[in-house]
Structures are given as C-alpha cells and as structure tokens.
Amino acid sequence: MKKLFLCISICLSFAFSASLDEGLGRYEAQNYTQAATIFYDLCQQNNNAKACFFLGFMYESAQGVDKDDARAKSYYEKACQLKQASACFNLALLLDKYGQNKQADLSFYQACVLGHKDSCVNLGLRYEAQEDGSLALDFFQRACKLKDAAACFKQGLLYEDGILVRQNIQLASRAFTSSCELNYAPACYALGKIALEKKNQADAKKYFGKACDLTHLNSCEEYKKLNAQPNVMMN
Image (cartoon, rainbow, N blue to C red; front, side, top):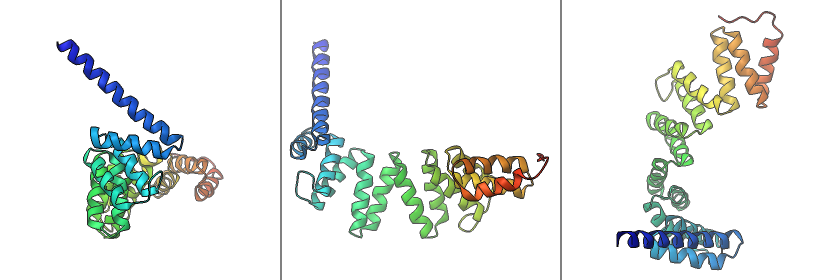
C-alpha cells in the first residue's frame, strides 16, 4: 500500500511538472493565451508559485490578457507568499509605481531575504538616500554576500567615506577586494588608490593593471605612471 501511494505521488509530481513545462513552452512560443490558461490552473489549483508569478507578469505586461495591474498585484502577492523571490521584487516595483513606498519596502525585504540581490541593493540605495547608514550598510552587505559586485563596492565606499557610518579603511579594503574579485573595475581602482596611499607601489600596479584590463581609463593612466617608474618595490 505504501509503495502504491509512493508511485501515485511520483506520477502526480511528474504530471504537475509537465504541465508547468507545457505552460512555459507556450509562453516561450508566444502563445500567450494558452500559456495564461495553463498558468491560471496551476496557480489556482496547485498553488504553483512560478505559475502565479508568470500570470502576474502577463497581466502587468498585457501578454495574452488585458493589462490589469490590480490582478498582476494579486498574483504577485500570492507568488510572494509562496516564497517566489522574483514575485516579491516585481510586487515591490508595482507598489512603488503607485506610491505605496512602505509596502514596497516590505516586499523588497521579503525578496532580499529570499536571496534576490537586486532587492537588497534597492533597499541599500533607499536607506542611503535617507541617510540611514546602518541599514544601507546592512543591505549592501547582504547583496555583496550574494555576489553583487556593485553592492560590495557601495559597502566599501560607506566605510571609506565615513559619513553615514564610522570610517574603517580596513573594512573598506575588504569590501573593495570582494568587488574587485568579481571584476568590478571601480573597486580595483579604489584598491589601487589605497595601496598608493600606503606607498605600496607593487599592489597599486597590480590593482590598476586589473582595472585597466577591465577598461577603466583612470586606472590605465595610473598604471602607465607606475610602469614608467624603475624598480617598483614592495614595502
């Protein structure tokens, strides 16, 4: 009996996956009306988060259905409750569009917690604009851990500037290093400048060289200057 129940569960799971794949196939083929019907059934009957998300996006974008932001919002909300990070993010953008900023912040936060790095960055930028350095730093750190190079760089700038948070060049350097390792040229340039201030020409040349390879023009100029100096030595 247990084996029969297990077999039925596996078969149902396979059928469910096939139905979602079919909907995605219709969507990719731009058969939007058919896709919307499949997504509707999956969302309503099976609480499939991805189907609810796509249905919300289709109502927001008028793909196979009439544009309806209210319906889009309701499907995004359902998908977000089902822990679909992209739905929480799109919901936040939609709430922002209608000036519902506090609710948008909550949706961005839900998406951020679910690992949506753009949502973490958005919150960091919002709190930075509000001059709340502690919260801005927190969300830039979250995004940095999710491998967002620009967020790591923003984290470094907050520590380097020392305006909204206490200045800490060591922590700034760590954040810039994380960003530079993700091939973000401005961070490599920042590390080069810090190395120059410490009179460590070898490190400066290394970081300027990497940033130059990433087409950062100011770094190329700095690299040329260092390269013209004979016997570059490490401290």
